[in-house]
Length: 301
Image 1 (tube, rainbow, N blue to C red):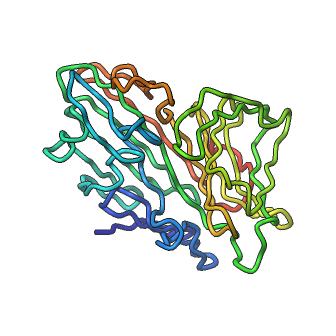
Image 2 (cartoon, helix red, strand yellow; image 1 turned 90 degrees about the horizontal axis):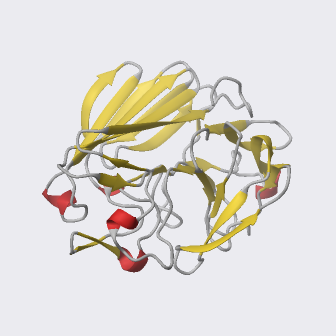
């Protein structure tokens, strides 16, 4: 089931399946700004990645001697979430541990997703609560896909990714064949601010940056300055990704954790996590997405 938020600028839709954004329409132009999940390329819009990001080594992990199997990016994106609150400017959903989740992740928890619409800004907040009687490590991340090119008649080369400030980011290398962290890191560029988009930028899959200081990263149309800006402050990792070939969408993915390393031992307690919650503890983060169409819009970090 889908629910909507709307003001004079945007119309936003969210599905109970995965508590996933499914549409962001600019009412000023009628444009759909969110990728519409064409199954021929990528059949998702903006999935929530929980309780881990990326892949598990060998597709499994072990906790207290029990083996749990899992696919890429966890299970929250594939399950029904319950609408718990609706106001004219917000929607709140919750996923609680159940028999299905316990077969995949042996902890009692709840995951809350709150969407807020203010002007041209959509804020997606996530909260994780540990309802179990033991410490709970977890990973979490965002994966929104934006329509790119904004105008289908334009080539990919008309667009760049632009950091708010000059950056010297490190790349956390993952294997193109297995998606696991290789252990190698390298500098992407020194003092740069723009990444030109090409149809071959993602021939080796996604690019994972760390060490960023900019509060935002924008997808920008070079000659017009039209942009979508994503707030990345506080996220230790930011990935960019699209399918190779003529570009039709671009993902900007702020994450709080990484895929497994190639040399990972498989114990859940040893896996690097966004946080490890004691029983009864909560953890929160927020992703702001600015659709005012200005790169580097102030006040949205």
